[in-house]
Image (cartoon, rainbow, N blue to C red; front, top):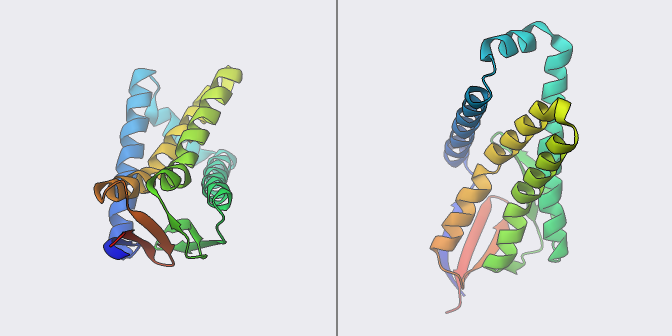
Length: 179
């Protein structure tokens, strides 16, 4: 097999992806607050002045991140992976240490399952618990923004062609085509 592409999770790539994610999150939250005519200033003051509420929000976000990575892990395991979880350059990640090569369809499932499943989950919760829908929409927006790296990497993989194989490594992804 011939190597046709590579993505490394280094400080620069991490900074770019996290910056785009933050921009998407702020933009989406601002739009959400404008659409529903919510007072952003009052919400901000409530968060800063109420330490238990701030703790709740931070805990909620951490739970979403953990669920997101666990869903990646479940998808990887479905395709026979050996898993390793880690933290590098402000990114929590799940990698396959088995050297398996995955096709584009498998990578679609692995990379985008957290985005799709948690979005549906939060939409269902916001419908079921209407009095707390703001929290679930907030969680959904956070998960979508957190999935930006997965989306960017999947688009990059698609740009290399549908017949490529992808190997997960300790530092990113390698992409191959049959010689």
